[in-house]
Length: 440
Image 1 (spheres, rainbow, N blue to C red):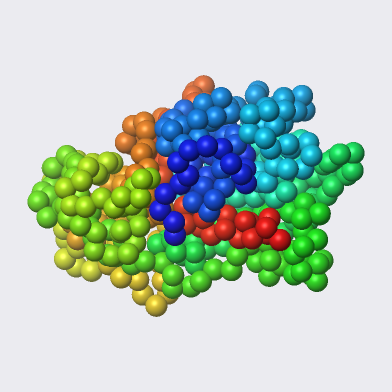
Image 2 (cartoon, rainbow, N blue to C red):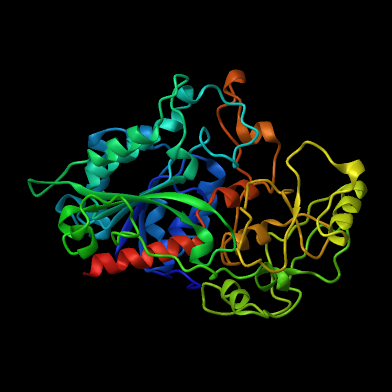
């Protein structure tokens, strides 16, 4: 995994990120050599995070960004204006077929099996976010990228669209299959494949399944032999549109997090602001490498390593779990989603956890506490230089919203931003594969 993104200038290959979140997928692509040309993100806090980590290197993003895809890219004329702007300011002519990549993971609150447990939302058909894939289709048709990547939760494949039981996935698949764009007066279609991939096979310390759909423009796909040889296959990996993973490539949690363990920590301590020591493993050295290529040593500043202020009884519970192989005391067991103690080392099956948007889902393998934002970010393979903006955490109602009470705007605190992100190492592997496709 690379360690730092480009520092200055705007050179291709270029990509447009339509539902960027805090920037995990974008960062992976940047580490693979891509340049963000335009970003859209509705929620204030993740958009703040995204731009704060990029404006120094990619100053054009101060102008080439938007919040609401439906109001700012909602018409063909608006998409045309974007294409004209990209040509004028970045030199990439989308109308001539030169834009390299469009990516998007439309919000999926109605279909996620784990990331939106406390949803106060109404029926799925009343959630506007569950139709945003149609806006992504429209933008792809207008920008004609060489490749597009649709990313979502695995549950989308089986999700029911209506109370009558109609599934949503066929609608999504057909909408993307129907994309036709025009380049210099010539119609172009896309060769489209999909795959459920597991982040642990791409160097991520999680068993995090993601649904990926890849579309490659016909003129580009003509150079991919496996696609040409397997016109009826829908598997993206077997047909060469996504990279194959490598089981057992994920680091152990001890290798990943041990350098962040502060030996002076005591329950009730607020924060650790500097690294307790030097990096001890290769992955720690990678994640501590700054944008300038310098590796942070012991005593260097450390951000987002603030601890939860657990009540004494919770600390007692966590300590019991650490001392008893993860067991929860009988008098403390509840029906609530139970915490798990993180293992220092994986079993032969590899990672079995999935990073979520809640702070207290996991207990640290050495100390009686939940994970900090920085530790959760490492589970998502964010480098330590990446800064997260907004509140550390917030209440469930403010996080989920409640349309019945008119609360449509959701707060997106740091833990939620991290938990919702595409793992950086997964995105980087995909980006490197896309570079190979584009270079053929």
